[in-house]
Length: 201
Image (cartoon, rainbow, N blue to C red; front, side):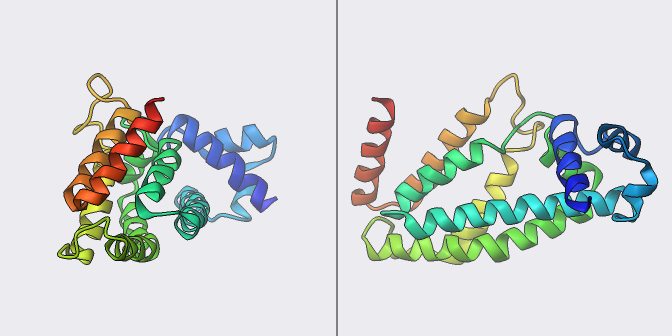
């Protein structure tokens, strides 16, 4: 029952946002009483925290798999971009934005975990890129890692990137192109251009 509550709640939160969905809504969706939900989750905040943790672990596993099997770090970035497109939204209804606005403690913890867990794989990818001659050997790996994750989070902020001016796919295209060109060697830029050309074919 706990997993059923978790998955149903997650679907509701993604569709309608953390702020809008109530425990009553979730209970009605599951055709159970709120009391049953509270037997597994003490309150809505704990339920949201569990949902965030569930998604985080899924994303981490998928990104780790991409980085483990990538032919090179630039290819890996293109694969991560596809994954990110499934989750990013610059709408005020975005779960990311609502989490930051209404549950800042959960959001702050998520950012720390993200940097610690996903950041490790990202740093390894940067090192591989340097070894392959795709990224400049002079880059500060720790600085680039922090800049990358902070910048990515900013894409989800509708105050910075409103729906009327930016669409998620366009944001990701511009962001990853900016990121790669900032750290790539001439060899890396040539490979980036190759992937961009193949993508358009």
